[in-house]
Image (cartoon, rainbow, N blue to C red):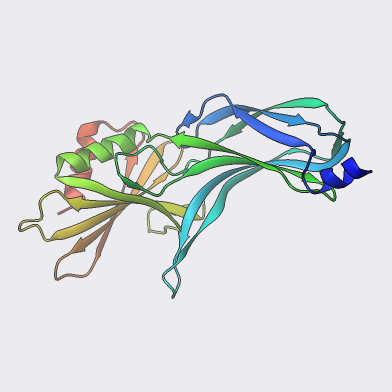
Length: 246
Protein backbone atom coordinates (compact mmCIF):
# COMPACT_ATOMS: atom_id res chain seq x y z
CA UNK A 1 0.00 0.00 0.00
CA UNK A 2 2.83 2.44 0.86
CA UNK A 3 4.40 1.92 -2.61
CA UNK A 4 1.05 2.58 -4.27
CA UNK A 5 0.73 5.85 -2.34
CA UNK A 6 4.24 6.90 -3.40
CA UNK A 7 3.52 5.98 -7.05
CA UNK A 8 0.38 8.10 -6.94
CA UNK A 9 2.54 11.19 -6.33
CA UNK A 10 5.23 10.23 -8.82
CA UNK A 11 7.71 8.41 -6.59
CA UNK A 12 8.56 4.97 -7.92
CA UNK A 13 5.82 5.24 -10.57
CA UNK A 14 5.82 4.54 -14.30
CA UNK A 15 8.07 6.62 -16.57
CA UNK A 16 7.96 7.36 -20.29
CA UNK A 17 10.80 8.13 -22.72
CA UNK A 18 10.33 8.95 -26.40
CA UNK A 19 13.41 8.08 -28.44
CA UNK A 20 13.43 9.96 -31.76
CA UNK A 21 15.47 8.36 -34.56
CA UNK A 22 16.61 11.73 -35.97
CA UNK A 23 16.32 15.06 -34.16
CA UNK A 24 17.31 17.03 -37.30
CA UNK A 25 14.18 17.54 -39.39
CA UNK A 26 12.45 19.91 -41.81
CA UNK A 27 8.83 21.17 -41.77
CA UNK A 28 6.43 18.58 -43.15
CA UNK A 29 8.97 15.77 -42.82
CA UNK A 30 8.07 12.35 -41.41
CA UNK A 31 9.87 11.06 -38.35
CA UNK A 32 10.19 7.78 -36.49
CA UNK A 33 10.19 7.36 -32.75
CA UNK A 34 9.94 4.67 -30.11
CA UNK A 35 7.97 5.39 -26.94
CA UNK A 36 9.42 3.39 -24.05
CA UNK A 37 7.24 2.96 -20.96
CA UNK A 38 8.84 1.50 -17.84
CA UNK A 39 6.73 0.24 -14.98
CA UNK A 40 7.58 1.43 -11.50
CA UNK A 41 7.47 -0.36 -8.17
CA UNK A 42 3.78 -1.24 -8.50
CA UNK A 43 1.35 -1.98 -11.33
CA UNK A 44 -0.46 1.12 -12.60
CA UNK A 45 -3.37 1.81 -14.91
CA UNK A 46 -2.47 4.14 -17.79
CA UNK A 47 -5.50 6.05 -19.06
CA UNK A 48 -3.73 7.00 -22.28
CA UNK A 49 -0.49 8.03 -23.91
CA UNK A 50 -0.19 11.22 -25.98
CA UNK A 51 2.51 12.85 -28.10
CA UNK A 52 2.47 16.54 -29.07
CA UNK A 53 4.58 18.71 -31.37
CA UNK A 54 5.17 21.90 -29.39
CA UNK A 55 6.57 25.39 -29.86
CA UNK A 56 6.75 28.60 -27.82
CA UNK A 57 4.58 31.49 -29.01
CA UNK A 58 4.40 35.13 -28.06
CA UNK A 59 0.92 36.34 -27.21
CA UNK A 60 0.49 40.10 -27.62
CA UNK A 61 -1.86 41.96 -25.31
CA UNK A 62 -2.32 45.40 -23.73
CA UNK A 63 0.30 44.59 -21.08
CA UNK A 64 3.03 43.89 -23.63
CA UNK A 65 2.48 40.19 -24.10
CA UNK A 66 3.71 36.90 -22.69
CA UNK A 67 5.09 33.58 -23.93
CA UNK A 68 3.32 30.22 -23.70
CA UNK A 69 3.70 26.68 -25.00
CA UNK A 70 1.59 25.92 -28.06
CA UNK A 71 0.76 22.56 -29.72
CA UNK A 72 1.28 22.40 -33.50
CA UNK A 73 0.05 18.79 -33.68
CA UNK A 74 -1.19 16.06 -31.33
CA UNK A 75 -1.24 12.29 -31.62
CA UNK A 76 -3.03 9.74 -29.44
CA UNK A 77 -0.56 6.87 -29.15
CA UNK A 78 -2.52 4.40 -27.00
CA UNK A 79 -5.74 4.13 -25.08
CA UNK A 80 -6.04 2.74 -21.55
CA UNK A 81 -3.76 -0.13 -20.50
CA UNK A 82 -2.01 -1.50 -17.42
CA UNK A 83 1.76 -1.35 -16.97
CA UNK A 84 2.98 -3.95 -14.49
CA UNK A 85 5.72 -3.36 -11.94
CA UNK A 86 9.11 -3.51 -13.66
CA UNK A 87 7.58 -4.07 -17.12
CA UNK A 88 9.16 -2.38 -20.15
CA UNK A 89 6.89 -1.70 -23.11
CA UNK A 90 8.09 -0.23 -26.44
CA UNK A 91 5.67 1.38 -28.90
CA UNK A 92 6.95 2.31 -32.39
CA UNK A 93 5.47 5.47 -33.88
CA UNK A 94 5.68 7.33 -37.19
CA UNK A 95 4.49 10.91 -37.37
CA UNK A 96 4.74 13.93 -39.64
CA UNK A 97 5.70 17.46 -38.67
CA UNK A 98 3.25 20.24 -39.45
CA UNK A 99 4.34 21.99 -42.70
CA UNK A 100 4.36 25.31 -40.83
CA UNK A 101 6.70 24.08 -38.09
CA UNK A 102 9.04 27.00 -37.24
CA UNK A 103 12.71 26.81 -38.17
CA UNK A 104 15.05 26.63 -35.19
CA UNK A 105 18.44 26.26 -36.88
CA UNK A 106 19.01 29.84 -38.03
CA UNK A 107 22.02 32.15 -38.38
CA UNK A 108 20.86 34.52 -35.66
CA UNK A 109 21.97 35.15 -32.09
CA UNK A 110 18.56 36.22 -30.79
CA UNK A 111 16.72 33.02 -31.69
CA UNK A 112 13.55 32.60 -29.63
CA UNK A 113 12.16 29.81 -31.83
CA UNK A 114 11.96 26.41 -30.12
CA UNK A 115 10.32 23.13 -31.19
CA UNK A 116 10.05 19.89 -29.26
CA UNK A 117 8.10 16.66 -28.91
CA UNK A 118 6.38 16.21 -25.58
CA UNK A 119 5.13 12.87 -24.36
CA UNK A 120 2.66 12.51 -21.52
CA UNK A 121 1.04 9.56 -19.80
CA UNK A 122 -2.27 9.98 -18.08
CA UNK A 123 -2.13 7.71 -15.04
CA UNK A 124 -5.33 7.31 -13.10
CA UNK A 125 -5.02 9.02 -9.71
CA UNK A 126 -1.32 9.61 -10.28
CA UNK A 127 1.28 12.22 -10.98
CA UNK A 128 1.51 12.88 -14.73
CA UNK A 129 5.13 12.33 -15.86
CA UNK A 130 6.18 13.81 -19.18
CA UNK A 131 9.13 13.55 -21.54
CA UNK A 132 10.51 16.36 -23.71
CA UNK A 133 12.68 15.87 -26.82
CA UNK A 134 14.06 19.02 -28.47
CA UNK A 135 14.04 19.03 -32.28
CA UNK A 136 16.35 20.97 -34.58
CA UNK A 137 14.28 22.22 -37.51
CA UNK A 138 16.39 23.23 -40.50
CA UNK A 139 15.11 25.60 -43.21
CA UNK A 140 13.74 24.11 -46.41
CA UNK A 141 15.70 24.72 -49.61
CA UNK A 142 13.57 27.65 -50.71
CA UNK A 143 13.72 29.15 -47.20
CA UNK A 144 17.50 28.84 -47.19
CA UNK A 145 17.57 30.56 -50.59
CA UNK A 146 15.50 33.38 -49.12
CA UNK A 147 17.92 33.79 -46.19
CA UNK A 148 20.84 33.87 -48.62
CA UNK A 149 19.02 36.40 -50.83
CA UNK A 150 18.42 38.75 -47.90
CA UNK A 151 22.07 38.52 -46.93
CA UNK A 152 23.23 39.27 -50.48
CA UNK A 153 20.90 42.29 -50.57
CA UNK A 154 22.52 43.74 -47.46
CA UNK A 155 20.18 42.58 -44.67
CA UNK A 156 21.16 40.82 -41.45
CA UNK A 157 18.85 38.43 -39.61
CA UNK A 158 18.45 40.12 -36.22
CA UNK A 159 15.79 38.06 -34.43
CA UNK A 160 13.52 35.05 -34.91
CA UNK A 161 10.43 34.27 -32.86
CA UNK A 162 6.97 32.72 -33.15
CA UNK A 163 3.72 34.62 -32.55
CA UNK A 164 0.21 33.43 -31.87
CA UNK A 165 -2.20 34.23 -34.69
CA UNK A 166 -3.18 33.56 -38.28
CA UNK A 167 -1.63 35.14 -41.38
CA UNK A 168 -4.27 36.02 -43.96
CA UNK A 169 -3.77 37.60 -47.39
CA UNK A 170 -5.74 37.47 -50.65
CA UNK A 171 -3.35 34.76 -51.80
CA UNK A 172 -2.98 32.44 -48.80
CA UNK A 173 -3.86 31.76 -45.18
CA UNK A 174 -1.83 30.00 -42.50
CA UNK A 175 -3.32 26.98 -40.71
CA UNK A 176 -1.19 26.23 -37.62
CA UNK A 177 -2.55 29.03 -35.42
CA UNK A 178 0.88 30.64 -35.10
CA UNK A 179 3.56 32.04 -37.40
CA UNK A 180 7.30 32.63 -37.31
CA UNK A 181 8.70 36.11 -37.79
CA UNK A 182 12.20 36.59 -39.16
CA UNK A 183 13.36 40.13 -38.40
CA UNK A 184 16.01 41.63 -40.69
CA UNK A 185 17.81 44.96 -40.49
CA UNK A 186 19.97 46.70 -43.10
CA UNK A 187 23.67 46.02 -42.66
CA UNK A 188 24.32 49.69 -43.41
CA UNK A 189 21.52 52.15 -42.74
CA UNK A 190 22.96 55.09 -44.69
CA UNK A 191 20.30 56.63 -46.91
CA UNK A 192 18.25 53.42 -46.91
CA UNK A 193 14.69 54.32 -45.91
CA UNK A 194 13.96 50.69 -44.93
CA UNK A 195 14.60 50.37 -41.20
CA UNK A 196 13.39 46.80 -40.69
CA UNK A 197 12.03 43.90 -42.70
CA UNK A 198 9.89 41.17 -41.10
CA UNK A 199 9.36 38.01 -43.15
CA UNK A 200 6.99 35.14 -42.41
CA UNK A 201 6.80 31.94 -44.42
CA UNK A 202 3.75 29.70 -44.81
CA UNK A 203 4.93 26.39 -46.20
CA UNK A 204 2.86 23.63 -47.77
CA UNK A 205 3.63 20.52 -49.81
CA UNK A 206 4.44 22.25 -53.11
CA UNK A 207 4.69 25.98 -52.36
CA UNK A 208 6.08 28.49 -49.90
CA UNK A 209 4.07 31.66 -49.35
CA UNK A 210 6.01 34.72 -48.24
CA UNK A 211 4.68 37.74 -46.34
CA UNK A 212 6.96 40.77 -46.03
CA UNK A 213 6.41 43.75 -43.74
CA UNK A 214 8.56 46.79 -44.56
CA UNK A 215 9.18 49.40 -41.89
CA UNK A 216 10.36 52.61 -43.54
CA UNK A 217 11.47 55.90 -42.09
CA UNK A 218 8.82 58.64 -42.27
CA UNK A 219 6.28 56.27 -43.89
CA UNK A 220 3.63 53.79 -42.79
CA UNK A 221 4.48 50.11 -42.76
CA UNK A 222 4.07 48.38 -46.11
CA UNK A 223 3.02 44.75 -46.67
CA UNK A 224 3.95 42.59 -49.66
CA UNK A 225 3.34 38.93 -50.40
CA UNK A 226 4.24 36.40 -53.07
CA UNK A 227 4.45 32.65 -53.58
CA UNK A 228 7.39 30.48 -54.62
CA UNK A 229 7.44 26.88 -55.77
CA UNK A 230 9.40 24.72 -53.34
CA UNK A 231 11.80 23.82 -56.18
CA UNK A 232 12.31 27.44 -57.29
CA UNK A 233 15.93 28.20 -58.27
CA UNK A 234 17.96 30.72 -56.28
CA UNK A 235 17.88 33.30 -59.08
CA UNK A 236 14.06 33.38 -58.96
CA UNK A 237 14.00 33.67 -55.17
CA UNK A 238 16.54 36.49 -55.26
CA UNK A 239 14.60 38.44 -57.88
CA UNK A 240 11.29 37.97 -56.04
CA UNK A 241 12.80 39.25 -52.80
CA UNK A 242 14.55 42.15 -54.52
CA UNK A 243 11.35 43.24 -56.28
CA UNK A 244 9.37 43.25 -53.04
CA UNK A 245 11.93 45.28 -51.10
CA UNK A 246 11.66 48.27 -53.42
